[in-house]
Length: 265
View 1: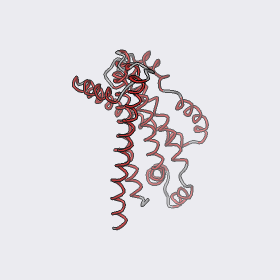
View 2: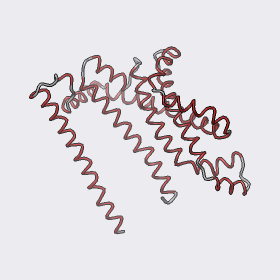
View 3: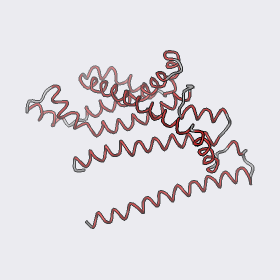
View 4: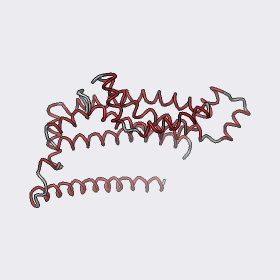
């Protein structure tokens, strides 16, 4: 009980320190903007964003409904594309784990495709699907599915061989071995692979939306560029970062914590 009380007292203090850090960061940012534009005249006000300008841009876009509309469209695309990436990644990763020769042949190729920037898939997407939703989903899947597949393969490959021998001794083979032993044992790396895959998917989604004319955060970002509104550009960048962090904390962090708690870790 005493340990629990100490932890509960520590968390508010940690949160206060984090909040104080970001407040100081904003103050420093605004000070740099003020010194650079009003005092030293190092740059023009339209060439450097400011916290107050970002807030004004947020209010303006919110009143027009542009920000909320872009948010829902991007999150919806991200969820749909990521779900498709997970299915493709899981199937590919399990397929690679069945045969070592197939793994040796395909692993370098998948690794190379994973390192390829998502923006490289945009010309293919435009030529094959045009400027519509299918093109964006294609870029998203190509940007994240390979990462998930490699993580699944690594998780299966790193399962303790003693567990597999014990399971086979007890008669577990084929599908039963995968469902009852391999997949539960590889679950930590699966979850880490999903988390990494989401980060790749979210970045790929922005790459696709930047090159398209559809509604979304990426398109709103480019609208800010076309209007020479640096504060709008900065606002959308902050929104993209915040969404990525929130989804990671609300979904993947909770799944990981639940798994660790279930295993007594």
